[in-house]
Image (tube, rainbow, N blue to C red; front, side):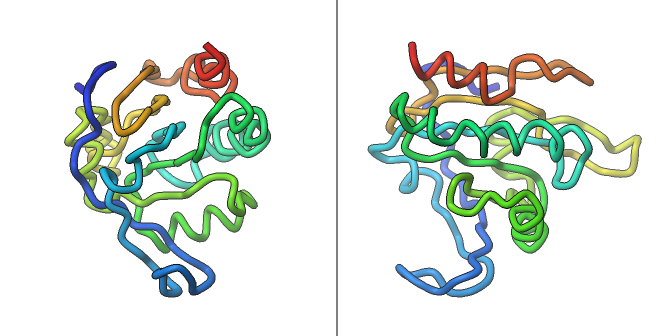
Length: 168
């Protein structure tokens, strides 16, 4: 499993864009994790799947609500990463009204989750291998803090925990 001090793995996530611009076409666009994280401080939170009850009621809204406070603490971007396709993540972004506050990034094949070792096997429930619930603060592509949630818990992957860590 990825640890504090490790560099984010090379991976490509997908982001659904509603508007064309800055090299992005409407629809899914690739996001090279290494390039996108270079020179930035990023709050990343990973979730098992879009539209799940806890994630829709607590995780995503918490990061949207804390966007300005995270920026004031030095966070350049907030990423939500989930093992879904870009169309689902785009629909979830619209549903959660994330706007430009949270980048909803799809890890459709689970390559990023597997490369970080932050996986949750829900095969017995018919959902396959998903992302574990976690949050991390990443500075210039390196993990500065990492909070991995226990099964069925919501204690350390929330926006408030990451905000405290960002403030130091």
